[in-house]
Image 1 (tube, rainbow, N blue to C red):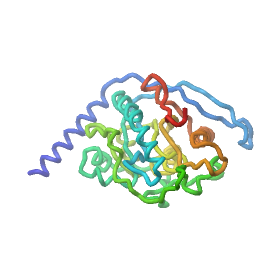
Image 2 (cartoon, rainbow, N blue to C red):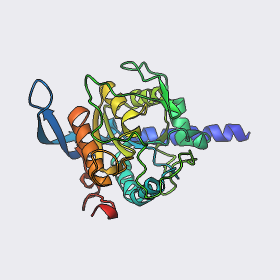
Image 3 (cartoon, one colour):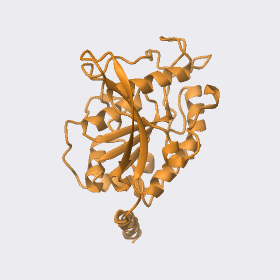
Length: 294
């Protein structure tokens, strides 16, 4: 009996979510920033700015690896600082009709009994539009850099990027997404799997993807639900450049401060992968800035 009640509840929540897809909603307006190559060797770029309009019902927002903890103390503190503004952005996107996908890598089992997780698991199988990343790294499939398209990172993260004065010991303390980012079980989805994302997107007719979270030089580019894979799927992708961070230690090349290092990686993404936006396109007011970057 309990199982039947649970299944009926899941079906009811799914029906609510699907009913909302029939609502006519205003278009989303974003002011994108990008870089376009100006020479055949791809070494000279021109800054571009465009205004685009996206149908919210064909748009998804992916929240990448905003875990409840991190092995690097500084990285964990910045996630806590960014989580409030990011949650505000998520709420605005959700209210606008965007499908919100929470992707806390290796922690999705924490949500197995939730309607949001079941929404991703139960989406009908769809054929991927191209080959999905299969090689494993850090607990999920990983889309590695494609050097003919993308040169090495502009920052040296070979030390794993801890910027603390006393370097932290690498471990895996995360168990879930940070609690200050709300997961709406009536509308959101939870997954860290590329095929599940393909299924969700096919079911909902998703063409456009907004991506935010951490860390840009690692998971926001390489995870199976992240920028490289999304672009290869043929999606229209934008990075929310003020709602991200990097794993970068200022003691490593190019020997700039942590936040300048993040700016360099944002520029790298704009050159080789996708344009960027700022959160204030949805929330109004000013874009988010870390206190230490001011």
